[in-house]
Length: 201
Image (cartoon, rainbow, N blue to C red; front, side, top):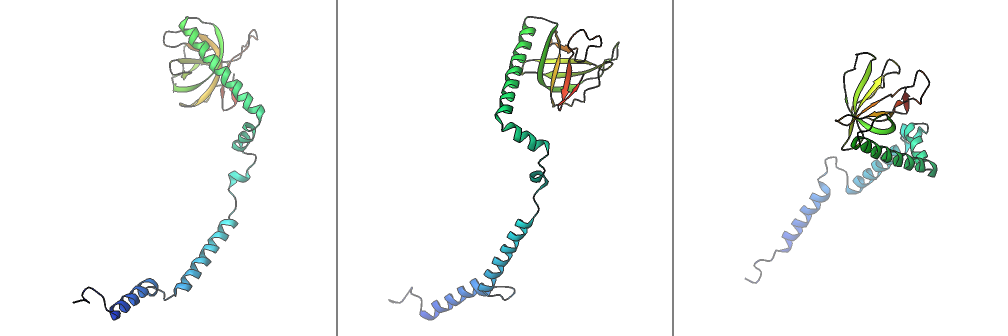
């Protein structure tokens, strides 16, 4: 009765042998544990060699790409100060447009960044005008009327950020930006629409 619940030595030995067989002997190709470790090490080393010998991506080697140029420029103090100046100027322009709208003023030249919200049909009455909605802030959206008899069409897309210089005219829905082109008579500074760094004037 004292030995009840205790396992005999032969049973323990059998269990140990089964455990060893399960751990090391259940290999499909008959390789020993040492062989398997060596194979794993060899394959890992080969993978490491392949990784090291793989050619670098085009992005990392293409130093002339616009992305890398902008990165190198933005890291310089000169370019970061220019960005800060542009941001301040744009905030001032947005505040000016709100003020013009609140005071119902017109015939004021502004230069501002915004998002193209929607392209509209061209206005073909009289001089042809390209028209689209242009959001400058959460509260103010402008209608842009760009004369395509005097200037090239600007290739704007919905959701795109563009910069516009033009003359603001008050309208109850937010206002209109026109004179976004050169002055054919040369009597006044012209306007433009800047898309991806190119101006259409």
